[in-house]
Length: 76
Image (cartoon, rainbow, N blue to C red; front, side, top):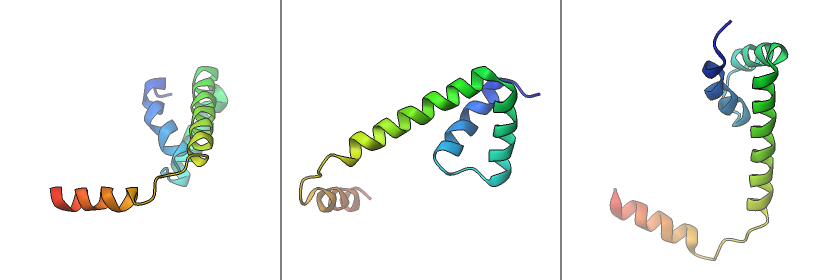
C-alpha cells in the first residue's frame, strides 16, 4: 500500500472533479482502509462546501470581470 502522503494530491483532484474514474476508485479503495485519510477527505470536502456557500452569496461589483480581463490583456 502506498504511503498516505501520496494520496493528498489525489484527494484534491477528486474533490475538484479533475480525477479520472480510475483515480477515484483508487482513492476510494484507500479511504475504505485508512481512517486518517478518510477524515482528511471529509474535512476537505466540508471546507470546500463552506467556501462555495460563502462565495455563492457574494455579489460581484458590476464591471469587475471586464476590468480584470483588460488588465490581463495588457500584461500579456
